[in-house]
Length: 86
Image (cartoon, rainbow, N blue to C red; front, side, top):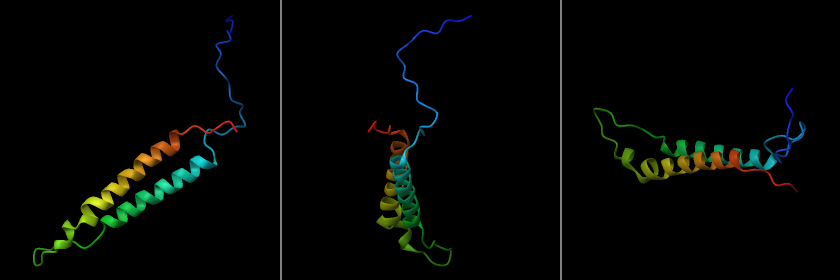
């Protein structure tokens, strides 16, 4: 028989969810940022007959990827943030 010691660890009740409404709102906003970033990267491509200089636009190679990256980082933060005890 093992004797359990009181290690000072607080146990959560089974009724509390690990993610709160704030977490889900942050995840939704982050998901929207990711989708917007990928949409900004969309566009026409170059063909062997015709060159499309728009493939090198700042929107497609800077703004879109940065927005998607910020969305992925924000998603990690939205999941990792611990809910307050209020």
